[in-house]
Image (cartoon, rainbow, N blue to C red):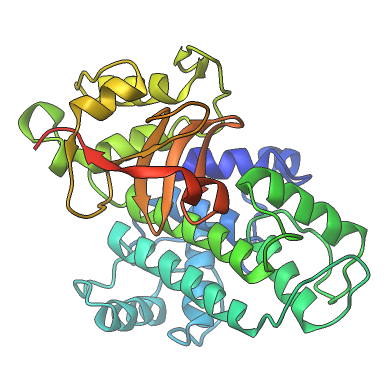
Length: 329
């Protein structure tokens, strides 16, 4: 879930204590991931509302050229008109209210714009480098609350520290991979989380597993950061199959305990879809590791670093991939 992810990220920054002590101090244009959290918590903004969430809404609409008036935190006629224009352009019911669908769409457009900026990245970045590439990396790391310095295009100590935190949190490597690829992974993960958060949970007892994958994935997201424990089957610590067992059981579904038994129990699929279980051959022949496919080439699983999201395109996973199966019809 997005709130849990944001809190995990925030705890890895010097801003965390500041945000806790002054929850309304987050200002538009500073740290977008905190802005997104404020908007998501608002859930819906209507004509006459005022406050920090409205200010952030106005700022984002301004960045997208929908709102050109003062960013004052008051949802008046001009802000309402800007919301309607955004809704019209994105095939959302035109109401003038910043409802959940509108807020999630706004966040996704914001993320897409950041992804487009990455196209300007020309190559690798490294300590001591100066230039436009470093600025783009700094802006991206600032988006996630990792970089707190000036966007000056200088790869100094603050940028180096931000890179190290991002690498650890997202299992990426700026040295071995192009920064464009690493940063894209971060943005796509954030976008995927927002999309999942926007999906309404279904009643497990009245729908099939296939139509209920969103609820299972939301449950899985809630345990990101849980440590890896061999044989673990609870939120105190999971191994890979223990994690799958727990996530499915919370949603009223019983599956076998081991990866090999899940492989034999699950049904083959013709093509990979969100919610399928992806299987890998790791420490022994045959299926020995598994996770839940999230889309965009990513899956969530209990790995050596605990519950995390990994990219199936990484060499390690790509070489060990066995296939995907589904639970239920």
